[in-house]
Image 1 (cartoon, helix red, strand yellow):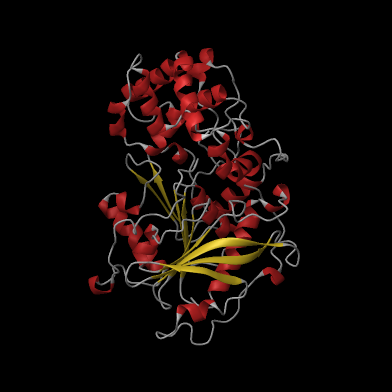
Image 2 (spheres, rainbow, N blue to C red):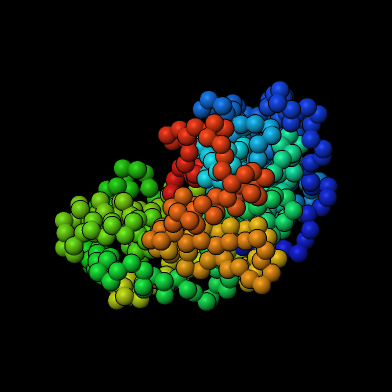
Length: 467
């Protein structure tokens, strides 16, 4: 269930939980040393300094956070961050993928646009950034995660007193939006990428989108290979069994390897449009193709062992939040119903271990965020892809939105960004981001940081996340 999604809290962050203050003396001067500046930030530990391209310094960090921001003097945990430092006087971008933090020194698109510093954070409950003991219902909410980012941004303003932006892709884009809703004054602009907005969970727009995305021939070929795979589940199941044995996979959470295979087949249609270009339709195997070819195709699109315990474990915090706050798409499987052995299983709760108790779904969380964007949102720039299923229910600007924009990349998937927009829109969006960062429309060529292979890529989780 490659899907996504939050809870409204009326509790305000206690002032005692805010780590901040005036900029450290001399930290923002051209001759300041970043290591010395980092040493002035309360609760921050420099774990290591790792290699980075010329002109940058890259640090792995931990930052002490309250396990519950409503109880700032209670238990704490260490949250992982990375810092890509270029210049104390440059704008700073707060980035999160919404999952684990990447420990490679790379830049998100807004960081490249403003040629700035980048503070990247790991979302709470993604290991090792998890409080012990874990109290999921009290500690893993969108407000608690927003309070994490608030505390970190305020702390780092001691050494980066200039303009700040927030960004993230997919669940990270949602996280950036929620952060801005609860702490609207922390940053000067927010750039969420492909961030879904499942306002009322039972009302589903995704299946209508999936029924019409792309061209009819491509949709038909995808549905045909799904039906073929379920008819040949014993044959493909043997390949999946051999692969699971080789990798040591088990299937306790979903119940069985057969159920994992069925769920993966259902989700392959969604996953195809999420990550593949329309041109990949030509690679879809025909029904009756050799099992090895069908297996290889699913390995590229949605592995038939995707829902093993070992593959699920890193993403349980996501599925938990999808089940209790964020919401998720309805399974797109009506044309497969006669072949299903586990109807109704393709939902977030299936992917959460029984040991983690799920509270009642919070139906106020997403409408609260949606209403804030429409009525009070300022300096928000949303980017979506027209072929991306997660863009089927996007954030919408409303009567109270100010200096805010929304763009769709034509034929774009879940990797859509500003650079992929039509030239005029791309230039407009780039100029907007730079304006929010206090910069001229275009950086002089002589002052731009050079691009580096593998460096100028969005710092997402190494493993492909569900959302």
